[in-house]
Length: 337
Image 1 (cartoon, rainbow, N blue to C red):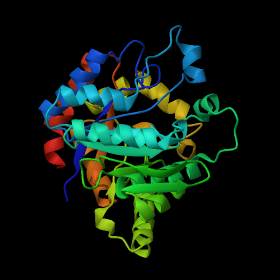
Image 2: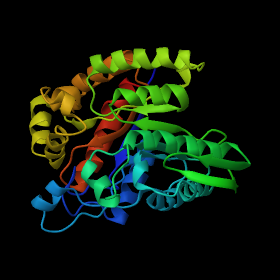
Image 3: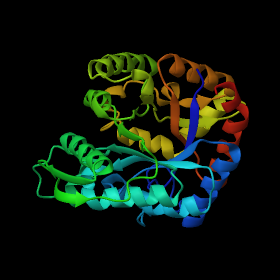
């Protein structure tokens, strides 16, 4: 079984995984065009609305966080075959599900059916609290309900939905997405997500998960998928990992530890990755020389991975990121696809 390989697009990564400044509009288009030229399946951007506390403390100027769906409209106009996905779209930060559905369907048509949607709760609770200070929301339940509300709009000619967080009545939603089945993924390492995937999604996006734990969770998800009357072979297992590759293993690890990406993972050890705080990130992620990275990729494939989704290349400037994308595409991808 071969692996699909895609690259991360820094839509909301300044100050988090990359320095400030980094992600100009011109840079994002350049990265996407580079990915298409190198044969990457797709690019995946993330979703932030306000600056995290630790980023405000570290940088004197705020980061530029670009809204991913709007960004993809420009990416679509400047590429021809490259697909693009949200890795992830933080659904609880978007209040009007019908407007979001309309944006998704519109973008799918204008891009020629090249859109994929990953949704999740987001890594930073503080962002959600800033946008919804009234509280009283279970973010996981809201994401699950939001996907159900989206899918109903995409399926029914006249749709009505009466949920706890989302409501609409007699909406004639047209046009539907261009793709007959627009892929929807749940993102996150929480075990509740594998149930949500098994019951009604097209894929799962965990982040930075060790291969042995991933294998255990994939096995459980397949069992749940069968129990839900669905075919597990139709579910994508699409984890995200950090990448820094080089001909010399030790030098690649050392360079990664000098990156803003390394600082970001340390911050996530208190939230998304808190269950893995005792594990070395360079061992879990795709960091090192080609042989070691290929070995890790094969272990992930054997654990059930189908897609190395939105690989986040550790780099402290744009040229280094572009060089990393090219090195991976030329030295590693041919050995794992």
